[in-house]
Length: 118
View 1 (cartoon, rainbow, N blue to C red):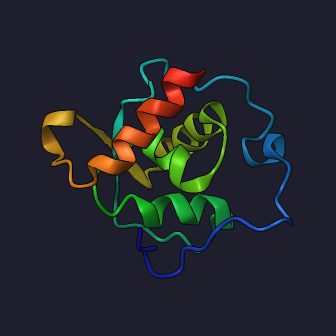
View 2 (spheres, rainbow, N blue to C red):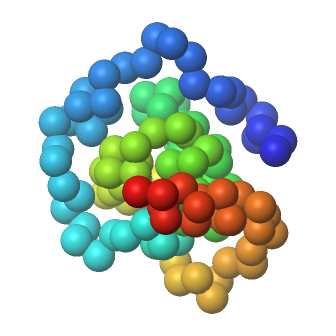
């Protein structure tokens, strides 16, 4: 898989996950699920933490929360919380699966296999 410009693999010096989500334990948007499709909105991301900037970079095309989690190597619940924060800040918007054309079936099969293994 090719990485979008400015996106790298996670390193060992990660910010504690609870800090990334401001101590939240559940998203404020109760409609978010793993299949929810999001896309980046043109906005200034310079004030965002690097982890949030990475999500916005990944979402230049429609992505599901499950895909974002797989790309970032982060737990699904943390990714859902981070997406919720970005939605509140107006950096992402929610769409529907019909708005997105699937191009990477291998990634979806990998995500599905991982979910089935849970």
